[in-house]
Image 1 (tube, helix red, strand yellow):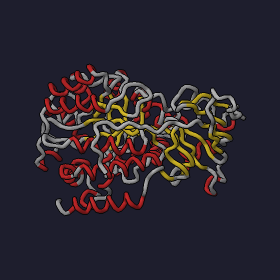
Image 2 (cartoon, rainbow, N blue to C red):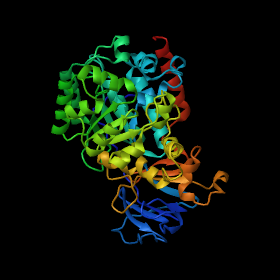
Image 3 (cartoon, rainbow, N blue to C red):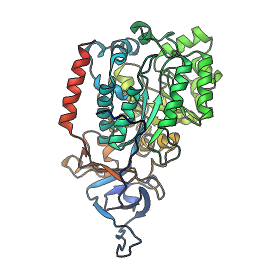
Image 4 (cartoon, helix red, strand yellow):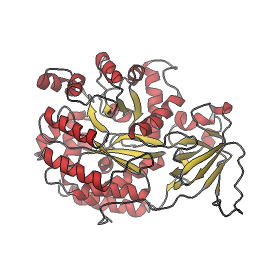
Length: 475
């Protein structure tokens, strides 16, 4: 299963496609019945034309490559989503009984930090593959995995397993490379006796990952982000300053957890004598190159600081509700200038692991806090696609000429949609279950009629069961 390769490259060539007669297309410019776009032409992985009644190219001219026609009747087309915060290794840690009714601090001890130091590379590969299949079946072309399975003696094969899983499925992977250099106030590491990396080891491993995997530019399939697990708990101020300097030197984005629960603020005040937001600003971690997951416990002052710095946040509604952490004040953040994106978070605290569920929940949640004008479907789609793709530097996240052809054809032909007057919004407002007829990443078809291509579901399930059973015997 695991390949002895240092670099995996997607080699399948894009086909040229002409997608025709969609019921509606989300271009972000006009809406629903006022939107004339029904057809999209894709050449060499790029959207080259959008409009209505586009005709196939005359391929008798040898200079023009042939096109495959896709019948999009009964479908609405969205840009593929960008999941900005995940923990793929948790895909085999769903509904662990001891953690099912615990808050974040206790849950960290009962679930991820109980299992992950003993997870072999083979199981991480299977977990990543399961998690990325969840992403594809819910319309995600870019998955940012906040991977923190690193300790002083960890094997490079564990990280390699995640890159391989993404390569085999043809999905774009952003590895937010986590880890800790101190145990500090991190309950999970302290109680499980995990020996953290030294900073020199972290920097050396980051350098190796960048050299082997990272790709610059908007067409990339692989990107590396510097992402210490927690700015409050897992590094000293000097270590975080050095990690920020490494990221800036190598033109890499930065990411971390922050203010998921009130414990972050309490520890920042105790250890540093200032608020968590003031602290991250003091060590150079508050600018437009940084994204934070959660930010649930942000106050008005912190929100203003985040907005002034033009930070990005990953809104993980399902996980925050599942763990009882609260609801992030994203509308106030957006008003202050924070870039809002969506993350599904790890499957151990968000068992459905569906981007479509996250978008449906975000659309509803903030209306419940405010009123029926609080969120719009157009806005929610941008949170889930364009905002994240642009932050990570991808030429995708929207449907326009010149953009990468990362597209999802949502099937809205079934009975449950027959009463829907505005089909363009149907996948968001109706939520799960929803089926993808076709999905393309850089013009390569990765999902067909609801099934992720080139996956033997039964065999994968059997492998997961066998590997997980072996792990449970060691716990």
